[in-house]
Length: 436
Length: 144
Image (cartoon, rainbow over the protein chains, first blue to last red):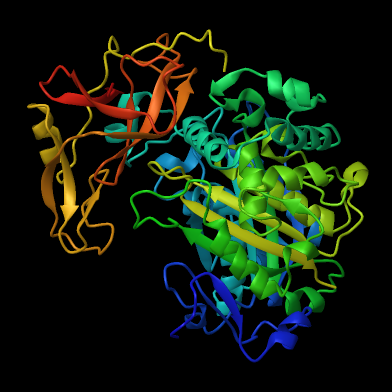
C-alpha cells in the first residue's frame, strides 16, 4: 500500500459502517499499518471475540501473606465460579492459567493444577506474558472456543508470590542488571519517570490524584488487602519516601498473594443454558516487544499504542466512548502513560488530562474501581486479574458501594515484563461490554 | 529528592561474577584489558547492546565485535534506595542508562558523581572496576 503513513488508520470504504458498527459487525474492512510496516489486513479474520461470553467471575481476598496453599485458593475460585453460573465441573473442558511465581519452577504447572482440581480437559495451557497473562488468557479462551478446541474455559489467575516464590529467572538479569544493583521494576520506572519529566515536565500532584482515587476505591473493596485500606491524600503521596527516585512508595505496588478467575463459554451456549447476564469482549490488542529491533527508544511510548488501536478498531469505539478505565497499575505513572497511548489525550499531556477529570467511581472516568493493584495489593503475577475481574464485576452491575453508573463498556489493560533499557515487554488492551 | 542526599559509589561491593553466555564471552574477555567491545551488524551498519545471539535488526547471526570508546551521555538515571544483597547498606547510589556515541544504551553505576552534577545529557566516560576473576565491570564517571 504505497503512500500510507505508518501509524495511521485508514477506513477503507466502510467509514459509516465502522461508526455504526455497534455490537454485531466485526468484519469491517479496516486497515491499519503500524510503525513497523505491519498490515492489519493480514489478520483477515478478526478473532470472534463477540461470540464469547464471560458468564462468571470470582476473587479471593488479597493477602499480604496467604497461609493457604495456592491450590486451595484455586479451589475457592473454581467453587465460586460453579456456584455463580450453575455449571458443573464436568462442563469445564478448558483451563488457562496465568503465569505465577509459585508455579515458576514447575514445567507442568497448568497440567498439575488441573489434576489438583480434578478437571478433565480438552484444552490446558499457561500464558506467560507477565502482568498481561490474565487478559491474554481471556483472549486465548475466546480463541480456543472459536476454534472448537473447547466449549467452556476456566481462566484461573492465582499466585502466592509473597509466601511461595519459586522464580528462577533466565534472562539478561544475572549478566547485565544484577551487577549494577538494579531491582527491575522500581528502577525501570525511575528511568522512565525521569525521561518523562525531561521531555514533557511532570506534575507529581497529578500522579498523586490518581493514587488517591484508587485508594478511595480500595477502602470500598472488602477483598482489597487490609493493610492498604486507609485513605490517603495527595500530600501523603508526595511525602511518601523515595524508592528509586523519582518513584515513591505510594507509586508502587506491594507484592501480595491472591487469586481470581473467569468462566467463559460461547454466547450461544450461554443462551442455551438460560444464562441471562454475561459480558462480551468487543476488542483486543496485544503487542510483545514493542520496538525491540531498535537500540534506543522513547521510553515514554509503549506498546499500548498499537494494541489500543487494534482493540478500539475491533470494538468500533473511541476513547471518548469508554465508560470506565481499568488499566494495569504497577506504578502510578503507568496509568497516565496508558491514557496517552490509548488516545484519551495526546502524548505528553497526561497531567493536563488528569487535572480535568474525576477518576472516582462516581466521576466521569472511573479508574480501577477496586483500588487497582497499587491499593488492593498485587497478587503476584496473577495481579493482572484484579483489574480485569473488577471490570467484569462492574459490567455485571455488582460493584456494590463502588458501582459505576455507566456500564456501557469497560477498558482493561495489561503490562508484562521489564526488559533491558526499555519500558515493558508486553502490552494488552481489551474492551468489554455487557452482552445482553 | 533532597539536595542533602549523599550519593555513594558502589566500589566496595563484592559483586557476583556475571555469568557469560556462549555468545557474550568476547565482551567479558575484552574487559580484562579494559576494552569495550560491542556487537556490530554490518548488514545495517548498527551496533547493539546487550549482546544477543542474533542481530536485533535482521535476525541474522553474522555479527562482528568492534571496540568502541565507551564515551557517551546520560539518557536517564535513578537513585537506588532499597536494594538486595550484596548492595544492601550501600544505598543510595546511582543507576544510569548511558547512550554511547555509537548509539546504544548501557546500564551501569556511576563513580565520583554528585547529585548536583547528575543530569540527563551529562557527558560520561568509562570507569573499569576490577572483578575478582580478572574481568572488569563497566561503570561511568563524568567526562569533565
